[in-house]
Image (cartoon, rainbow, N blue to C red; front, side):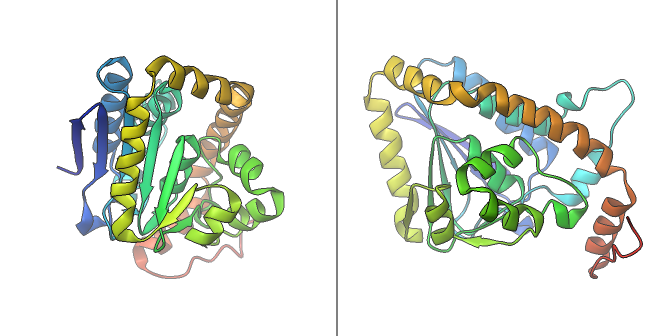
Length: 259
């Protein structure tokens, strides 16, 4: 199973489990997580959700082979029906607390999704990156707004325009993660925090989360819509084609001929 799912003591744990492909996410994996999150949100016995990877890596982001097969716009089919959108919609709309435990690399959507979690903890070997511009694309799922609000414009620009990777300590200093732990401590600590949430009054936790997120809800949805409109168009543009071709050919892309 590429996504391990376990419900225990009121906590749903979803864990990336595709190490031969660096936990790269396919459409099937997105759909599996989307369905699990929707079901968990309606299940009164589940009071917290934990997202995790493996000690070696959280996720390398989208599986590019699968992404190219499943991401191209289809006439008459809304982009929002794609599994990745269903997953992110389920994550953003989840009324229950979501905890993320990040060890190793969290690339692309692996970093983006953290902006929609409530508690984010990482191991000291964690490394984050959002290389959208490097792929001829633009930020996704509200990251242009939320990451800029979180880190401040200068640091966000460095990470989003240049696609620079950043360390666990930098992520902590920018406020992306709440705590940095050793790789051995990470998952037990995240599980302990999930257990603490389960022990609290469920209505109080849900209400507090809703109140905290309400002020930026409309702005986040507007940013996602704007990003989505541009992302879809850019995916078909020559720059993205060159970026992906270069990736598969294992060479450096050449954007010098594009305006």
